[in-house]
Length: 140
Image (cartoon, rainbow, N blue to C red; front, side, top):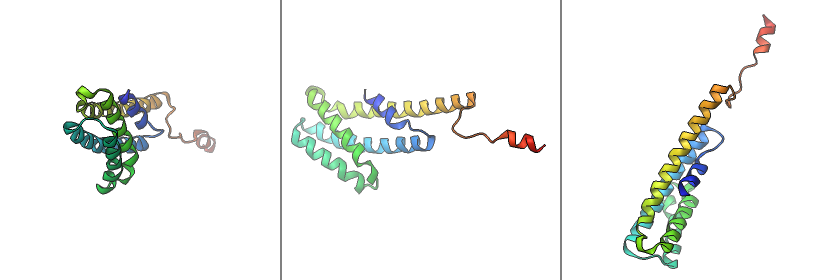
């Protein structure tokens, strides 16, 4: 499910916006991954731990120079921690799994974008408008 969400997050109406979304997705996920892994390696899930990690997920991106990543990091942290709470015997694995899921989803989103771009080129329905050839033929 998380890989599908990441794919949807990345696929946008143009390549540049999709690449920007992919670039934003991975650092936010890495921040969440690091915070959750450190916490869950030593402590079990707790509501206070979730609150603390969400707060840190909002604070850390700004401190490391990625102020636009707060929301994505906080959402990712919430998902990781809630799933860890539901699966307490392997809670420390959840950050690793979500990092893998997100990486797969971002890759799938970029591959999807490339395929759709190629289909647009093959069918002549790309986003770039073609020059009006009728105006040049009338001038001849």
